[in-house]
Amino acid sequence: MQSKVSMIMPCYNKVKYIGEMFDSILAQEWDNIELILVNDGSTDGTRDVIAEYELKFRERGFEVVIEDQKNAGVCAAAKAGLSLATGDYVCMVDSDDELDPKYVSLMAGWLDENADYDYCICGGVHYTGSGIDKKFEPLNLNKINDEESYYTERYLLTDVRPTVWIYLLRMEYLRKCNIIENYFVNTKGSHEPGYVIPLTINNGKYKYFPLPLYHFNAADLGHSRYDTFEPQKQFYDDYYELCKIAIDRLPDDIADYERKEKLLNTALISRDINIHRCAKNLANGNQYLNQSLESFIKSVNDSGLIPYKLTTKIIEDFGFQVVSRFVSNYLINYVSERTDVLSSIRNNQGRLVGYGAGRVAKRILPDFMSYDLIPDEIWDIKAGLGELFYEVPLKQPDFDSLTEQDTIIMLMYSNKEVESRLDQTNVKVVYFQDVLDELVLERFSEQLVKQN
Image 1 (cartoon, helix red, strand yellow):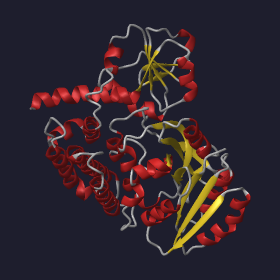
Image 2 (image 1 turned 60 degrees about the horizontal axis):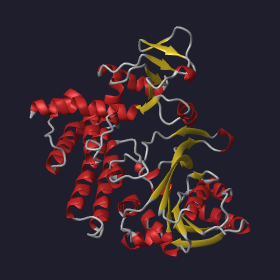
Image 3 (image 1 turned 90 degrees about the vertical axis):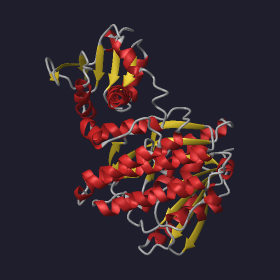
């Protein structure tokens, strides 16, 4: 018999989208679902749609719990829903997104068959439009390993997807993490820190499915995205304060004083990275560029987590993107856990082949060239005879020509079909993210050593 999955959905003024989310829940391949809908004082007809679908859910065989409350914000709505859950497993979903039909079945099915796992994580995809006009765009997410000693730091740095919707937990693990008791509700902002920080730091065993099981509605990104600088800065300031609260409430046997200090400094540095990016990219942000850069430099230097002192000149020489990535690598312990991708490429006796000539390759290849790392050829299925890509021969893929002496650099995000073909060869495969990280680390470290 299938285990019961409690699915919690905070609902507030999403009448435009909530019906399509409900349809995707009805289409789930898992039958034993307890759907808990917390109506957070909606005024736009959302409650009427809930009433319309209640019978459909019950006819589908789902349990339905509807909780009406005065508008108190998503944190309070989420906590109310979690407090009502009675299932073996629990997940939360947003009322303006959608689910793949296997969203529940793949993750809950895994937990049913693997008693030693505490939770599952899935990938996602962005979409716009609705019905037959819906368009999907892949999310450019960094990979998650089977075990991550610094998963919480990666979350704080948004190096992994910072949303609650991609997790499905055992109820006993939710209770072990004291998530419900420690949920901070005196805000109408994000509730991610109070959920994800304790979830990821309690040493639970997880399974990651790099599949687009959760569909994010890119047309309605909500309170976390603004077009002008001031409200976006306020969002990151508030988010940092929520992180501080969540970190402070962690028990000492899970995170001692030293770990908490590192997490707090990581959250502060992440805030300053994001605010400076906003100052560079959003309207009205130009006037805050110097201030936000100084704040970033100060938070890094004061933290003592990086064995170098940053200066404005260093950032001018290398660029903010390179410096911030270098800092992030230190904070997630990438430096001490390096895979030496560059060494394997340089010791390569065969061809260095870049796979892909799309948007990622156009953005990344000039960086490779600036570091004197130039592929012998680029493969792309759209290549024409005699074409060049940044002065590198552009060719059709020829998997049969690959030998164990060759190296492939994937100049794209995950492509299962290509990766499957490469798995059938003896070729070494590396990913552009890892190559870039090591290039930055190598050159940046050398320059900092000279300056100190």
